[in-house]
Image (cartoon, rainbow, N blue to C red):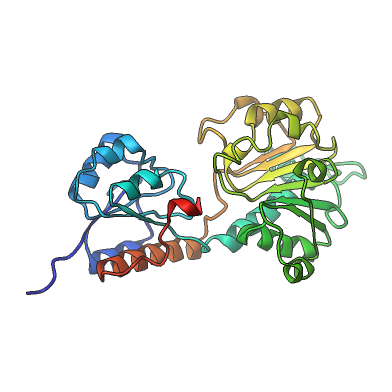
Length: 328
């Protein structure tokens, strides 16, 4: 008899080619509209599926997992971050968790560089004037930004994405500095022309641009808190394409409004879509709707990793992108 196909429930709309391949390989239930599942819908999905394919917008906590029943055996997260899933509780209940690491590295680094340029060269301000039809012609002192070349870039978190940002910054003539849990090997530092700072406070106080590229963990929550933000130079800008929770958003807003920080470029927010309205009103801030990984190629590659993880699990082997609590 042929092997019974795995039951897979997908919580959000995915690229067509990904959905088509999932349907070919598994008994797949797709989401008909592109809205997040409710808490109750997620719990119910786990009771009828062997594999759940959530996204980073789906919060799967211990209480939900307690109601999941015995059927679900794999949560194949569509995304690199897994802070939306209680991995420890899942493993205790015999549920494996996988993710899609490495796929969005280049795309997110591109966006970090775009935000650096957007803030320092005041691109959104110029765009707003053009769209409103208020441009009256070139002037010697209009929309004066700052030259990127020669500026000191401090990268907070020198993993895959941080290193990709460093390579781009080198091409723009920036001086690369970084703080990381572990210092990079000397040959990697040499390749990236990167200077290591053991003290985050000392690095922050000397940089022209801070790029946040570390994950959200208990130890990085509000790593850029009010005290540390006050160490930044008044002429410095902060860019975040990682996780909103790493920055105290209210403190950042107050300092931007007071002119204590020159500008900010944000693609992620501490409270999801609930963004401080005072932050939205500032001209020296570039806000994007979590576009860092939003490329067609990246989204398809993420889906391919999800499929490989499920197929490997279905074949009785360890998913290649298995997440274990010790990794977090």
